[in-house]
Figure 1 (cartoon, one colour):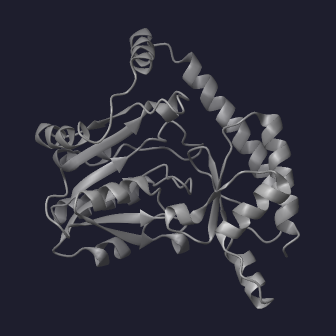
Figure 2 (figure 1 turned 45 degrees about the vertical axis):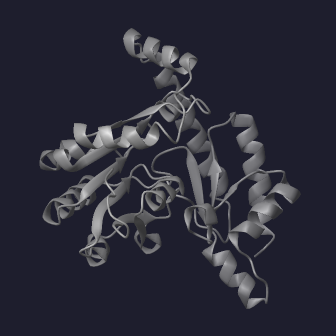
Amino acid sequence: MVIVNPGDEVLIPAPYWTTFPAQIIVAGGTPVFIETRNSNFVPRLADLTAAVTRKTKAILINTPNNPTGAVYDRDALANMAQLAIDHELWIIFDECYGAFAHAPHVHHPIVTLAPRARDRTLIVNSFSKSLALTGWRIGYLAGPKAVISAVKALQSHTTSNPNVIAQHALLHHLESGDPAFQLQLQRQVSDARALGLSILSALSSVPQPAAQGGFYFYLDLGGLQRSAKANGRDLNADNVVGTLLMDAGVATVSGTAFGDPAGIRLSYGIDLHLLDQGLRRLTATLDTWN
């Protein structure tokens, strides 16, 4: 395992999905979250550097990011890689949404930008996203052999195998070399993104999400919360999620699941008609809170 001693720290640019932080805690480590809200959800090198201590063991990099959709550019990734080299940190590189970087944004695997970081990088990827195998949960971890062996020793006692149907389906895809389905999926996601951004642009008190990568819109509710507070109301992300479900019939995910009480995540990986209908309901509901 990367985390070998109780108290070892892992730097995590936030917001971030809670799975990895939970695993870090189970392994005896301490997640250290880096605020990115004021830098378009891309971590500043100065903030990362300031967070490094003698206990820091690794930095977790997730691009395209879940939930924010931010795509880290070449300079940001190269700087993070150099930081890891300078401080002898591991890099846990989560690129599960790498197939969905929306032009002009480009996903860059970190080891191609910084080959010297290769022997200290663990790459996390998932076919569940790139091939729309939702629920099949099949992916991979790549890294130095000794680390992978240690990870297997832990994982074999905590999770079961990917099901055999998923394995054979994926094997067929890899052996066929036919990109048609994946390209069609990427076009579908791109069309849904364009439609969603057009509808969400009508929001009066919520900034339009960047949605540079992945298939989520992440809405910043900070303005709505400040307005509500001025009127004596408490409006956190959990309240918003409940209201949208009950009043608009739209299911969203609270930012509290990512360590952020001021945001909500919306998936646009659905049928365009349903997306259009749902986002118009959501927009109308949020605009009544101005």
